[in-house]
Each structure stands twice: as structure tokens, then as C-alpha cells.
Length: 214
Image (cartoon, rainbow, N blue to C red):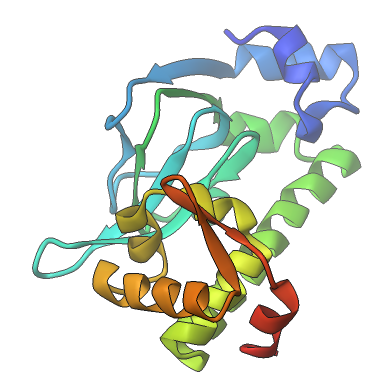
């Protein structure tokens, strides 16, 4: 059984009454994970509405050569794979923790019966789904429409914290080889668009980067 106080601190549930929070607590549980542990595998049955409360969770698929293709990285507080749960289909991808972390799992059948009828919760739920669709549209544009130079420029402009990521991790996220990413970074540095700071980079000329993809 999950703590009512912790549930109240979560945006999705902040407008629930004490009675509704008590109902939610009885159908929820908290689980903790270590770095590298798997939350679920592709094709596992999706029974729980999952809310990431701590840590970084990557969602990925594996190609026929056993290479990981990272689809998304979730940070707290995010709903994870709610579309699969809502439709009652198996998970379309796997999820594993890149750091120590924790989730709250909610029995979805009971959640739908007891809580989802609340307009505030319904709005938050579908807002999360809309954000996922928008993210998918961005991924398609990033990886199909843009070349590698424009792809890197767009991503670091919109996610400047990505410049602090490990090189291999960022390359994987952008679906390119580390060598290609290195060449793009070297080109940007030579042109004065970015500047090396220790083991990472910082943006020095954002306007020039914007021109590359707008």
C-alpha cells in the first residue's frame, strides 16, 4: 500500500480528495530498482499504470543483431507506457533503469473503476498521452527528415543538458555512430557554435545552430 502523502505530491493526483487518495493508496505499491534492472520486457503483459518517481528509465527495442535502439528516456515524475496499459496490449518495448530508481505501480483495472472518472485525472492522463504523441512526431522528424548535422543541432538546441551526457549515450539516442557525432561536434567547435568545457560542451552561438534546421 502506497503512502497517501506521496501520492498527493504527484501532479497527476494533486486534486484528488482524501477519500480518493485513500482508494488510490490501496491499489498502489512502490517498487525500488538498482541501476541496470529491468522494469518490464517487450511483450510482457501490461497490468499496472506505472509512474516513475525517481531515477532515469530508458525504453528501448532490440534489433535482430541484439543492438539496443533507445526510444526514450524518462525522468520523474512521468507516466510510462500508459497507452499499452490503457489498450490492454503487451508492452511494445522494454524498459530498464540507467540509475537507481523507483516507480509507483497502480492496478489499472481498479484505477479505471475507482479513479479515472475524476475529470482532473482524466485530463492529466490524456495530456500525458498527447505529449507522447508529440514526442513521437519529433523523433520521426529528427531521424528521418534531418541529416546528421541538422539532427545534432536541433537536439542540443532543444535539450542543452544533453551536452552533459556521455558521448556514446548521446550518439545512441540520436541513432548515429559515436564517430559521426564526434565529427559533427568537431565541426561545430571549429565554427564557434559550441565550445569544449572539461569533458563536455556548451553552446556559444545558438542562432547559428538554429539556422541549420529551421
